[in-house]
Image (cartoon, rainbow, N blue to C red; front, side, top):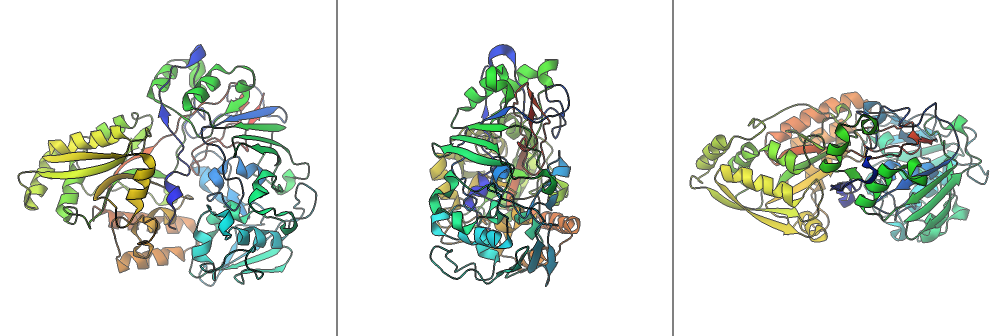
Length: 574
C-alpha cells in the first residue's frame, strides 16, 4: 500500500479562474451526484455520434499493467474489462463493486486469504477469440515486470510469492499463487486476509491479456480490447487517442457499460482555461464534449449560478479524499501531544475552505475519513473549536506545554496552484495559528521537490499540508497506509508520517481485513478512525468537491462517489 500516486492519481483538478467565452459554463454533472439523463440534449440516450474528451493530463500510461487501480475509471475502462468493476450509478450507489468478466464479486475462503472467480460465458476479445482465465493470470503476472511499472503495489504485497516475482519476461514459471484449474476459473492465494479483494479486482491489472499478442512496452499502442471500444490510435504519449466500437463486445455480458457513441476522440495536454472555454462555448464537436480531469474555479461558478440554462449543466462530484495537516512527531515540538492539540484547536476551517475555492469547492471536515458511508465515515470532533477555531484554547494548551510566550514552527507546502496543498491554504493556516501565538514560517517547494521531501522518511518535515485519496471506497486503503506501523517505509515513499506503530491499531486493521461484509467492515473502519483521531496525529481540513463542464449535446451524465468524475461509459451524444 505504499503508493505515492494515490495522492495525485485521481486529482488532476486544478481549480482555475478564467473568463468564459460565449457566456456559458457548466460542470461535469447537472445536480448533486450527477442526476441528469438529459444533460442538455433532449430525448432518451441513443447510440451513435462522436464523443470528444478534453483533458489536461495525457493518458500516458495506457498499458493495463501500468495503470493505477482502475486507471482513473474512465477511458481505460472502455477498452479493458476486469474481474469486477464499479457500479456505474450516481452518488453513493456508484460505490458498490459488481461483477464484470466474473459471474460474481468472488468467493472467499480461508479468512479471505483465498479468492475464487468464475468467468461468464461468451466473453470475447476484439478479434472474436475467447477470453480465458489464463489470459487474466497472464495479465496479472506481466504487471510485475520492471518494464511495466507504475501500477498499484497491492499484488506484490498481497499475493504469495509476489514480493520476489519479476514477471513473465524474466521468469519462465508463473506465480503459483494464481491457479487456473480450467478456462473459466481463476484462484488467488494471498499472504494475508483481504476482505477488500473484490474492490481491488476492479484494477486494470486484472484485465485479460492474450500472451501471443503481448508486445511488452509497446502494448499500450494497440492493446487487445475486451471492452466496448478498441484503440485505433494512441499518439503523442497518450495526448491523442481514438477509440471505435469493438464489434465483438456484447452488452449481454456487460451490464455496466452502455457504449452509446460510435467513436471517442481523446485530446489531452490542454490548459484548464482552454478546456473550460471550449466546453462552455460548445462550437462544433465541442458541443458533444466532456472533461474528466478539469475543474471549474470560483469565478466560473459565480458566472453560472444565476443562469438557469447554465445551471442545468452544473453538477457536483465527490471523491473520497481529505486534505489535512500532517505531523511528524520525530521533529520537535510536534512530539508533544499538547502542541499538536493546540494547532488542532487553532485552525480556522472557514478561512481554509475559502482559500480552497469556497464552500462550493470544499467541505470542512474534522475526521480523517471523508464523508462517505462506504468508507466508514463516523462523525467526531475531538478538538471542537467551531468553524473559525479557538485560539484561546490553543494558547492554554501551549502554556501547559511550556510555550506560554508562543511558538515558532515551519509549515511545508507545495507552490503548485491546486486546491489541496496550495500557498493560499498555507497562508490561511499561518494566519489562524498567529491568532494563537504561533508564528509560522512557510516553506514553499516546487511540486516535485515537495513530493520528494514529504515522502522521504529522513527528510519529512515536522508539519506539512498533505492530502489522501482512497484507491477504492473503503476505509482500508485510506487508513492502513497512513497509520499501520508495518507500512512505515525507511527506504522509499513513506506515508505513515506520524510513525504510528500501535499494536492495537495494527491488530484491528488485520481483524477488519478478514471481514468480507463491506458494511460491517465500514463500521469498524469508522471506529478505528475515531480512535486514532484522539492522538492528534493529523488535522483534517476539508474534502474537495468537483465541479466540471460538459457540452450542451451531452446526455446521460453519471457521476459516482467512487471516482467523483463523469463516467464516459454512460455518456450519449445528440
